[in-house]
Length: 239
Image 1 (tube, one colour):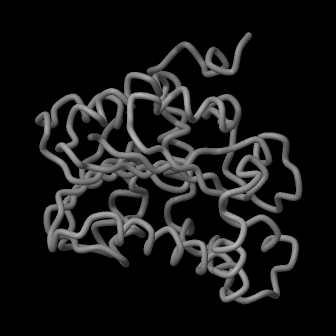
Image 2 (cartoon, helix red, strand yellow; image 1 turned 45 degrees about the vertical axis):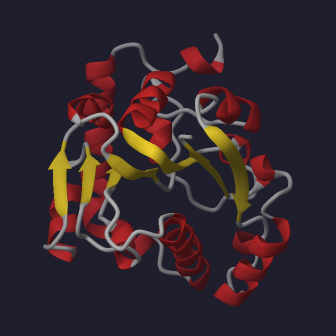
């Protein structure tokens, strides 16, 4: 069986399991990721997203928004977050009452969005790995983006899949897909100017390190061996 076929073919059952998993994690989810390294990861991703679009209030769609963490870095005006977990959405609404959040399957709800209507589509901290049809979702992302619009996606990768030097992960091969660089380029090949970054190569090995170390590491190493970083980030645009 190929990696593409590894997800459970019973999509309705998968969706229920994903929802149950993140409903269980929801209340303490943000507390899991409070180390200086985790905070630095948030800062790097948040700043990357906020710097991608120069408009004052860009239209942004967040697929698998979780507790809405990205709203610490971007404006809630013209932002919409989608997540399958009602409890994660509940916390997002508590944290960011000014944000617009919708409960449901990102693979289905994106179909209701108008074509050429968003400046940026994001799917952060491995949310994209939970898509049961990543090629179709990628096409939908391109459809709803305006000309010149961009996307940012983060997926589970080779290192996480194999549990190499990973102290904690939410990866579950029954529910999510791990991507290598080849699979990322294949999935998002309909976009232009693709760039793949690695984030956090050694930070988790030395938890006492501060965020300054991780930012330096990202600036020096993000272009190399991305499959073996703690996180893989892919960015592209619609020309």
